[in-house]
Amino acid sequence: MSVPSIISVIDDDPSVRLATDNLLTSRGYKVYIFGSARDFLQSAELKTTSCVIADVQMSAMSGVDLLMHMRGLGQRTPFIFMTAFPDDAVRDRALKAGAICFLAKPFSTPALMQCLETALSGPGAAKT
Image (tube, rainbow, N blue to C red; front, top):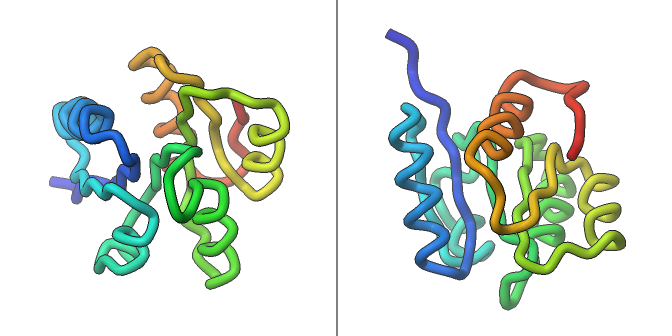
């Protein structure tokens, strides 16, 4: 039996965290949820996470700032972003920083699952 991938979901909206947790857990992933980038950075999951799914707009540290911070630490963890406020400039910044996908809320389950499959399959993935 294979070990499930560890997915860290970071969003300041509790309902989004819960819904994403339920969806991914039902698909066999091990999921950890965090209400802020700071909570994630202080967690043991920082080094064990297979993929981060993060909101773009959060207080204190945005999702894109978290990605750039992690890249500065040498972490290559794949990132998927979700946002209720899609903005082309932010999207471009996120993708240039190395995000795998940039999803506008509400997004479909197949869209998220495709992004996750791409993120977990390694480099060279298509970006949405």
